[in-house]
Image (cartoon, rainbow, N blue to C red; front, side, top):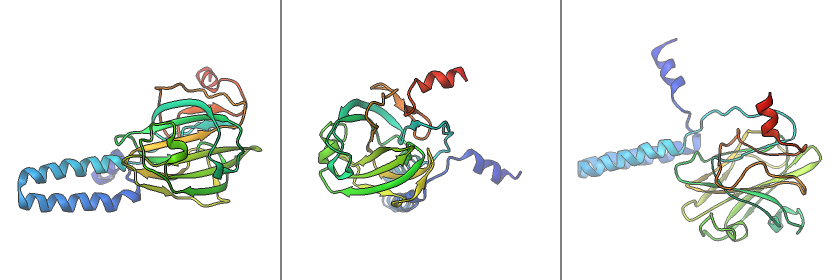
Amino acid sequence: MSIYDSIRQQMVPITPEGYPFIGAFALVSLILFWIWSPLGWLGTVLTVWCVYFFRDPPRVTPVRDGLVISPADGRISMVTTAAPPHELGLGDKPLPRISIFMSVFDCHVNRSPVAGRVEKIVYQPGKFINADLDKASVDNERNSLVISTAGVHVAVVQIAGLIARRIVCFVREQQPLGAGERFGMIRFGSRLDVYLPEGIAPLVAVGQTSLAGETILADLKGGDARLAFRAG
């Protein structure tokens, strides 16, 4: 193995969505160096942060049927029951909802919470209030996926926030998705909501840190999946 290959293996991959931004930050840094070197160093720090923001590290996803996996890195900000957004077509009855808040320092690549088929993708324009507020679920700009899995529906909603002004979706309707497979991202800091089927108990708590593609949020088959994995 060459030194180049060894270095590449140690580097965290960057999502293709980030290359234009990284290039722009780097170009501005060069211009700032020409104007005044302290500004150039500030631009360099911001360029490094941009590279860090668009990182897309590999994840090891639990593969047991029925598990609901976190679609985002971040902090579990709410675990509650709430009526899903009307555009999802899931009815008005409150469903278990897990909200994950992503700061500008979290990885922003979003991953499918379950294995299944994308039944519906709906973009809804809206406001850009603080995504950590409960009303952001219905007031803010958002993009929603309804995924059919094992005869039930799991919805995942990308919600814009104060800083996030661009929601990106990589998939299309009727496309099959594997659990932990990348389906989109939000630039620069925001929130994801996961709506579970009625009667499914969340296995996470407010304040817990989640990792996209790895943290178990719920078990559609019932039981405490966390204990099952510890026992295994």
